[in-house]
Length: 184
Image 1: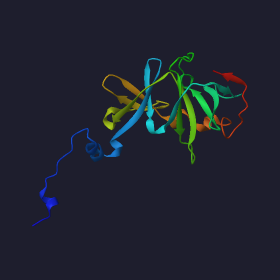
Image 2: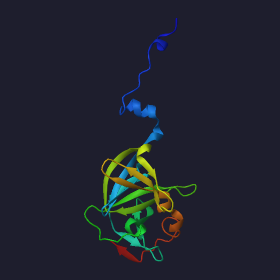
Image 3: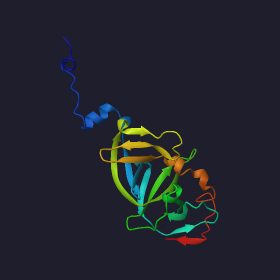
Image 4: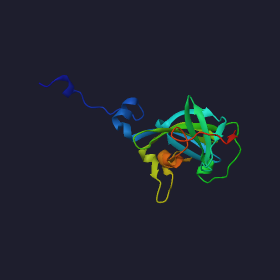
């Protein structure tokens, strides 16, 4: 006679219960933070987002790339702030009521670095399955892929390529922080 465990038939958990998600494995779903630039919807992995802040005054640095809005003091740390519209080659627009800075963790060699990204508005936290994701394709630049949702397509950005810390040499904690002009 076998023990009680062998007499009980295995029952599959229902699709969206915590047990089902655990059974599928942690890698099959992920959460994204979606945001807007104009009419387009973008997203980044939520595990990269450190915080979201109201757009504040930044200090513009000499010889910084045009898409670097400047730097800000975040609790004693100098953080470069990127204007994502300019970084992606989109038409710049003046900041609006919903314009925010997303502070992100960017992998750079052995040490992660904090960089800010100005976006028009933060939309929502979205959970996607790997089946909803599509590859970015050849020559996609900063795009990691696409997420196909019921009523929209999210452009998934590769934070490490988009905000490559090597492009910010001389900006932030490792370089000069002498402001030349203030940017609202």
